[in-house]
Image (tube, rainbow over all chains, first blue to last red; front, side, top):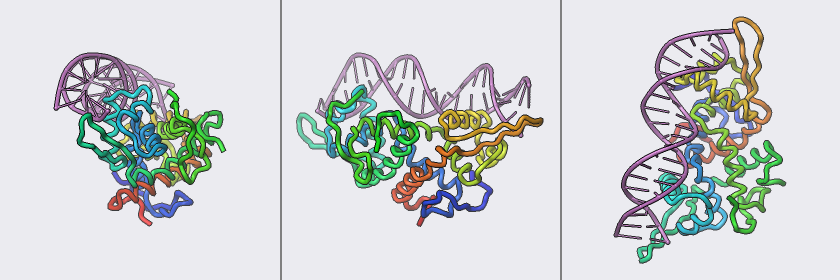
Length: 129
Length: 129
DNA sequence: CTGCATCCAAAGGGATACTG
DNA sequence: CAGTATCCCTTTGGATGCAG
């Protein structure tokens, strides 16, 4: 489970300079696991862009997603504290989704990932300076 | 596939201020897809820490990984341009793995993810200021 | 030492129908 | 409107054995 190596310094521009590769990988994997799933980033980015959306609005904003998958991934994000869900007890039902503070704090990390992806694959259409 | 909304400004501290949620999600997903896989981050972090490692050294540095999975994920990282593979034509065989420039450039993004994960889950053991 | 091939179990994702 | 339930396919990961 744990490496036999001593603690090492890496991630140069980081304040985290004395943890093992294993510990760093574990932390990053926690983040990746939350973002994994075919529709999660679409959900997050739409909530980033539009603030608060109802279930049906998310459904329209994300073509091709099925209700089952949308619910499933929303539940996962909710359990991970990324998305908040507010139910208005009325008929017909109304449920609003938005990002939590923790969810919004993902912004710098996602931006770094996007920047890297854009540099790596310049001919892609997402993001250019 | 594409959203019907106009371009929006978000990702506040980014230079990418005029792309759609869809485009941003696509770019980030490209990055996530490369990092997905149970052993990939362990491989990357170990190569970050130790520079160059032979196949057998990686095997020892990553307890519980099977040869099949190690090879498989190394090949995937190689195809994505993250890891370079150098074969020394000798008997017995010797193969060295290290990060490419593109792989090393992942550092800031991984660091941002680690920072977020640490803030989100302070009791975890990975990384503290 | 480095790696490929086979077989198998589990998880993820999707189509469809139904409901308070 | 906002879900739930069921069935099924695909992908991922792991165990084991063999080979240059």
